[in-house]
Length: 441
Image (cartoon, rainbow, N blue to C red; front, side, top):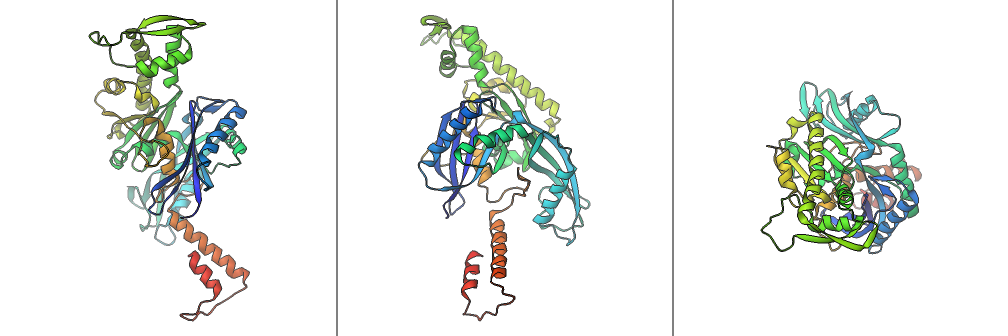
């Protein structure tokens, strides 16, 4: 195993998480270092102060690198849905050899990208095939190695504001790093929390974050719809601060310790009131009943869930939700959220899911606040990814195939440098040049 690794970076409004990782010899994710910092200079997923953002990002990365001497080969950044727009496009190519290879799949996706009407101020970060057609065969999920004369694709193209991408790139300069790939936040979260059966059936993933909530519909092998709502758990804190006339920090404590969507049981006399400081005069306190807290939280969460329901209905994707609705993100820790969501979404099954728990000695991934970073790691280190064009407009494919291609290319260059037209090699007597080539291949 080489010493090269990837950096996954989740730049959230409340927290920045940096993780350095690589695949081990069995293709399992090996965590090499983790860094967490409280966000500064970031609001609703956007950089609003690049100097502050650069410093906090640098601190998170520095902490992650302290426990590892691995060389960061590539950097994967989650991009908030607040900066993105999606559109549909299609493309078609003729199959000259009769058999579909990665080359034809790349060509047809590039054609779909070429045919798309991209808004000038936006940059493509994903070209995701919804399905392929081969000649008269419709809706094929994996056309690789199949035969035909014409290949078509219907694709979902995710774009992001150029200014948002440039700001993130500039924020990383303090850490002497460049962005290798941008990945949609909701896409990463869906990868982290969904099982294969949920993906096949079609499932809505709602990542309820600090200041935004990402909505993603995953169908088959990819996302077919994505959107966001500018409401998160921080809005509950502000509501409590305003309604209870208490400082923000006190309101946040109340939310975390006593926040619930379930009615207060009057028979439970263990605690019925809580003391809070007064806004503007924190030396004075007042007592408020817990029964006064629940309606404030309930109103904001109910509003958010109803807005999510409206977004799903407007998407036209309701018929592709046989896997139900999955909730993740920090807000899901509020007691009673699943019960309220189940009432609002009626007969559609709703569940709260944690991401895949990547075993390591640094951090616990088995919590809903880690969904995006866990999915980002899985995306970056996937040794057998599904076909798509990434933010570099390059086809994602098996790592082994890329290595073979690079090694063959390197061998050809070396042969040219040696000015060798032909080399005769006896069965047990290879030249030192071919020893090198053999090791590479």
